[in-house]
Length: 104
Image 1 (tube, rainbow, N blue to C red):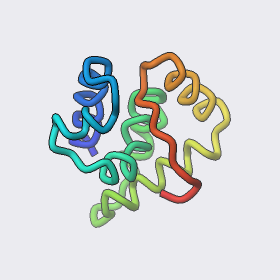
Image 2: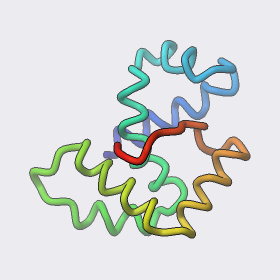
Image 3: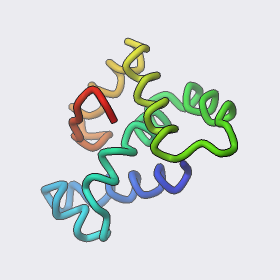
Image 4: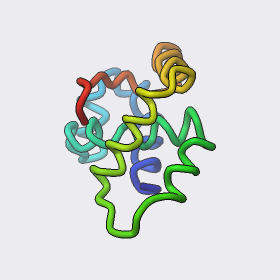
């Protein structure tokens, strides 16, 4: 999960210069679907570090990255305070404007 957060932060720095997410993904050689499917991990780590730390400390040793991302998304959706903070951070540009459906 730490690689996910690093990748997301590097995209966050590149995005304003590139003007589009597609160009930022291309510059870093990252597939859009990879970023979208794991964005909840980075969003939670940036917007609610304590909640993220709690989830990561309870991460089973064999858990896949996608399953962990799904748990992060579930935590975001079930916690209105975190969900609203992430939405406002996306609106003001401190998080990437990635939209996704209910399921990760």
